[in-house]
Length: 113
Length: 114
Image (cartoon, rainbow over all chains, first blue to last red):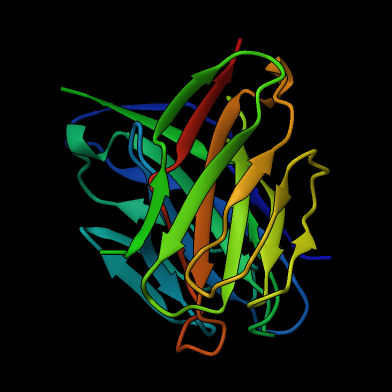
């Protein structure tokens, strides 16, 4: 079945540091890939997405590229801010729109001033 | 901004009480979901629905039940709450036929059973 593996946290960085959160997946066909973010006390929000190989999703300075050859969708940001402190979830939805989402376990990011 | 609402946001109740967590969306989405989020953050799908009068069990067994009488409404009920039900419950919806079929989440209902 489909699965998502995500780097273990927590991750602690200083403000303006470079961020990478690794995500790899296992799926048949061509899934859509997503990064969701959860701020303290809130539900999940879509951060970015990519629906086909080599697509790059971007939002709020975050980027991730759909790499089919390495089955990866790593999240990156060049300069993190304290306000980026949150939990980040990598997720996929199978090529069939009716399929349910599969989420990674989440990575908690703390950014220190 | 997503138009999906959950009430209550926080609930503290005693063991044995019946509770209903409400979830409503105004986007006309057919598919709706309930996730349970444990303290370690991981999400577990406990129920979903393809549309009116459809309910399915998710990947994680749950003692809760759901109903879907109207497209916009997907309440979750616990007949007799126990401390093991203490958790964060997240409702979500999606339009599977849309361009990306992304999930939209409510803000969550945090349940504490004493």
